[in-house]
Length: 281
Length: 281
View 1 (cartoon, rainbow over the protein chains, first blue to last red):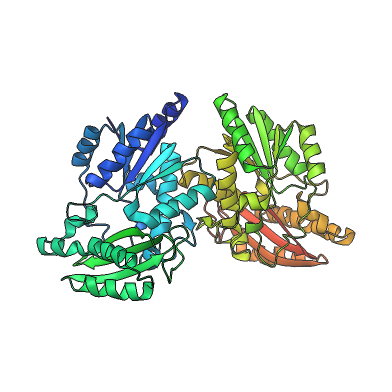
View 2: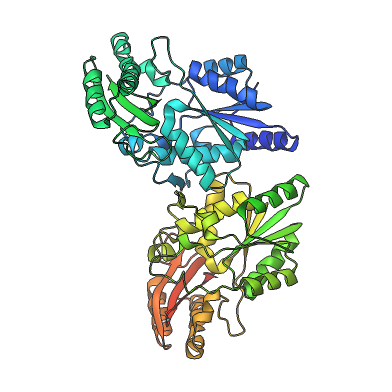
């Protein structure tokens, strides 16, 4: 496995690979790998000849009050995990190479970036779209694999690809969960043992909603209130949002008559965790 | 010469050309060709194996009060002129194919888009950057040729290419002028015969400034006032801006001690014309 740190070197690798007819898959990550990341890499391996995993804690997708500095990093461990999975290249650029001092170009996917995490984290999806576009241009992948825990991110990047006429196929991978159901996330490291116990309430809330809808409760207003109550019955929790949206355009849903995205963002102590599920009517 | 109207067809042509090792040059235009456009095409021919000229009156770079509807169009004449010059493909997509109903992705080059035409035409350079990025992704050129009459546009696109890690070389072509010095522009068609006579005042003002600087007048404030007076001494004129900026970052210049961009925008009747010159100290 190669570890490439320079943008120019990555470009050369990718140009050569393309010239040789190699099909490239990219797994864009912020590192600090867990089983979720490794699942994306394994999926990528089945879809391409060569897998590139990028590791870059992208500063422009963090708000000024967010956890850019604390975000966990361990390149050595990540590189060794990636190698075990059979990744071909770990691309770990530094921020100055990605955003030199004169940097000033940003991509915005307007409508899909407005609700949910976009409303709570202004500028977040502009940062995500911009870095993904840069990574696509540098790594030149035929396809890119994203985890569906970041469902809105998946939609934003998919829309950007279509709108900008990019030749990248986007593949979404189902959420990978701990045994008790907690969605895997690098941010779970922030949880104290007590908070970790509470954190399962996100997944439990999703399951509760699924069950209630199955039993005939279709009014999302009522569901939202019941879920909020359920989550707040767990210690250390603060609800950021609980929303029902259509899974394609993220339009608000009042009554569940079609498959509907239920998306949650909940603070558990200082950690802001997200999770989601498509709820069948 | 091929005339391609569909985005998907253009992509197929470009992919095949790339596979066959063809070096592609793109000349992005809004059509209604004059000698300036043809000069860009001839330049492109010397730099690549195949030349693609795009013709697209890009709605998103026009403000709501601007001349999108009146902008002159003549695809048949354009195609025949392009063919005479030896262009390989005219790419003339329609707006619905470029911007389908769900379209929502925009690229912004923040700092370089602020002054000059960016200040007078809000959103203009966002529209320019976005359409150029789309054209680059569709046509996949190795290089693109832009006219330097639109100097700020040239800088914006150049910055976007660097910031987004695109593999496109950008080539600027000197302004092509009429015999009396008027910069060629599709918008010159808007001028009545009397206005056409006045319109040469842009070029004359640039030459006047060059001469005054040569003679030792370096204060751009004084120069600006003298140029304004000069322009307004011509009938039908209204000054939009007269500015002295550094030619790389477009920072305002107070005293001409380095090569300096003098950029003008002047209404002649209803037509808004621009012109520029690099003034040596």
